[in-house]
Image 1 (cartoon, rainbow, N blue to C red):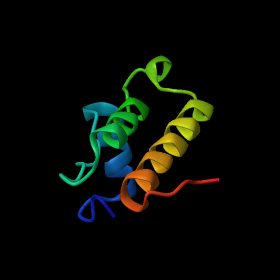
Image 2 (image 1 turned 135 degrees about the horizontal axis):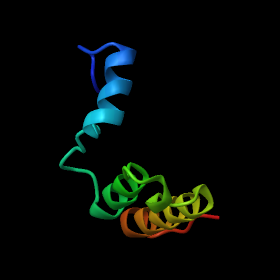
Image 3 (image 1 turned 135 degrees about the vertical axis):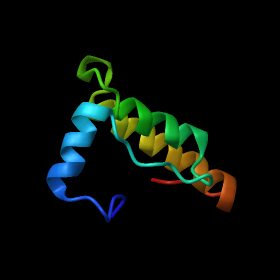
Amino acid sequence: MPYPNLSFSEVTSAVVRQNLRPQLPRCCPNSLASVMKRCWDVNPDKRPEMDGVNLLFKLFLVCCVTCVYGGTVS
């Protein structure tokens, strides 16, 4: 749980009223963090469609597997 000291209603209120978002770990790759932040945009019209997010995550996975293991993802 990213906010263990807050109730569900407190979290939802803070997300809507204060743009509360989880803190990203330092080890989170920039490309992944960028997609996550776009999904959290306050303006829903600026958020990517899920098909696009899915494609970005697949590309990210392919890059990770290629870099780390020198293999491919089918």
